[in-house]
Image (cartoon, rainbow, N blue to C red; front, side, top):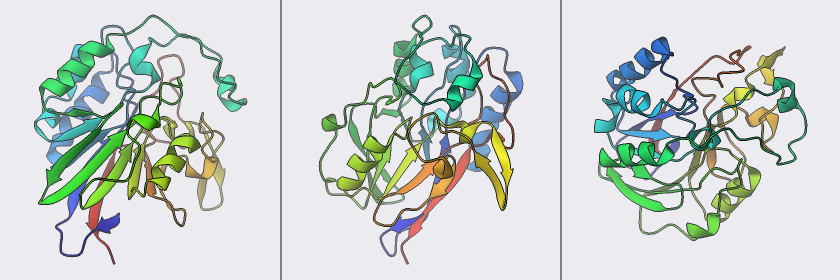
Length: 262
């Protein structure tokens, strides 16, 4: 992402999303523990850490080494409510905003554990972080999929900084537009699982859905629309416990390097 002012040193951002951790996911937990070896300067999580009522200590243990690095986070719907079985084909149908929730999860405990190690909760707030002498203003919203978002709480032009970024779980167009109107430089999001099931397509593969109103072609990775902030959507590491299949959309984390503009 060439969004830093001239002369500023590169900033390596580890962006992950949609861990959907349970105590049984030993290989995924081991993978997460290995990410500190990538030596990022900043970590951004775009939510859905949890997928089980006993997952909070599992998540905090898996992230332990990364919590020593400056971090920013927001929550997704699965951080608030335990997953329940549902027909996966419904993801391909129009989203009418109807939700079936399981029992509430211990998201307050997760929030406290992350903040106690210095990570900044952006669900309804702005924060300033300085990385490699670059001042970053970050702002975020709570989960738009549950309609918990209220961008007015963080709206407005960036304060004095070198670069301004937005962080949100589900990249609904209303949030992208609001952040674009406020002249942010980049947005980080998750939620889509890259489509989770993708069809073979010339040049790669094509998502069938984003599970929100984001166009399917923007379901994963870095995409560019002229006049808007750069958008990086993580396809995520996990899946819900009742839909453990990914087709042509492998699990991922992203190592995004902010560089000086051309």
